[in-house]
Image (cartoon, rainbow, N blue to C red; front, side):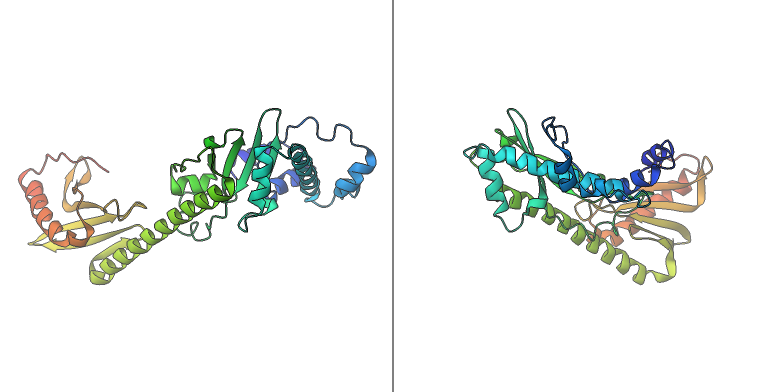
Length: 316
């Protein structure tokens, strides 16, 4: 839960607060709920049948409000699908039926909204995010919510499909460009294609992380006696060459190996404006950076000893 949500909860009456807190934590909603025709002619018997949790309200159960809302949403979806199927010859009605015939998609994965001149489908994609949080959870203080990837498609113009990612997936995957959906294309083909694209992207990230960890492990084992500190993304080593002591900082981003490690040299002796002198090295292939570093250290040493008070690198 975000800081903003915690602040909102504090503004709510303590008696009502547990119900709202439960909704933030457990309820899975994400769609338009603004059809004025819904429940416009509902009677008491209809509500008792469709929303039994309302008639059996338990004030001691913090899940009571969430249960009522879930039942209302289920009724709302039935209402929307009924409106969709009233025009059996529409493209949207055909697409919905065909999509549910795909073994990858169930009725629970698709939300439906039927307007006057437009139909919207919000489709939950079967994306495997199970291993991502353990790799990219830095900076997450509160629960960021469920890791979801949703595809929003509108008819009669399905070519303008939108990908909606949860905040965590947006942070990890960055900007994703959807493949073009042609006017003659069908959702039962397009949804698996987008799902595979996202799963492949996630697998590439996992593979890259494995390569990053293997590289750091090799360096830590090889220079065990020189290690100062390390974590999953960086390491610092203390080295000596020709009576010159220096620190090598290696930082590896999630774009590795496409983006090479950032290598920074720091002097143990020489300072500038109260900070150790340093030099961020130009990028080089991680397969051959040991010889490269030896060459750069010699240049760095000369810079430090020949110009003890001038150094033009900037702090990364």
